[in-house]
Length: 328
Image 1 (cartoon, rainbow, N blue to C red):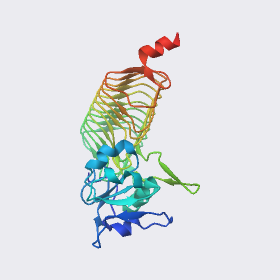
Image 2 (tube, rainbow, N blue to C red; image 1 turned 60 degrees about the horizontal axis):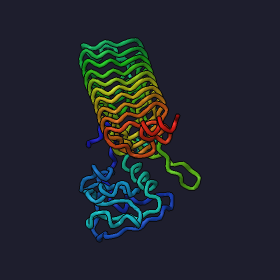
Image 3 (cartoon, one colour; image 1 turned 45 degrees about the vertical axis):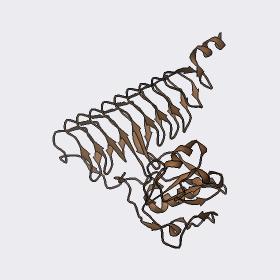
């Protein structure tokens, strides 16, 4: 993707890109004397032939085998899963080195600085309705017949479709909102995710260069928070409804026609299929795959993948009928 929200300061020569101030040890394999130019950092799936990527968990071995990246930061035990022509950068702390590389390419992505160049919305758009004390940033696009409440902030480069309803006290940044989306009062969309790399008793914040994409006919409840992706996109599918106070972490991808009740939390990089229903106060761990037509009971804790058409409940979440039998 061409990043609409963060400036890429590349390209870099690979060796220059890997230099760091943290004395982080690494070694390279299969590198020639020629310079290797790196244009961007992407995940395994989306990396192109001039990109660097990372491979830190055996769970992603299938994606590693197919990656098109010119170079990959990884562990020694994962070398054989990568393509032969991919330069392997062996590092004991894969995520930390990846974070350093990302912060060099995108230095503005580490900390969410306040967007202080916002202006009052008055007179800047035709055919929209807006409340008092609402501000917008530069290069914002808002479709016709959209309504925006009081005291909301629409930050630079945000795209909002037509016939949307944006409530009061809403903050939207680093986001693309399609047509007919409702975002209710107090929601915060597109802030950085909660990602840290422990290193020598210092928590290094992982850069977040992705964005949020909310597809058409969806609704985001009051007080919801949706974090932008780290190296990819956080996606809310079509006709998906989030109740109040739901938290969606970075890189989460939610399918179409899903219903998620209040106070649910979904941890980073988890994928939900279509027609998923989650009861209130359930928690879903990170890096999981939840299939199509899955139902998760309220208060459940999901710590492993769930197959299509399953009904689960409890902590840890188990088959619904088994949960009922064991609860008697």
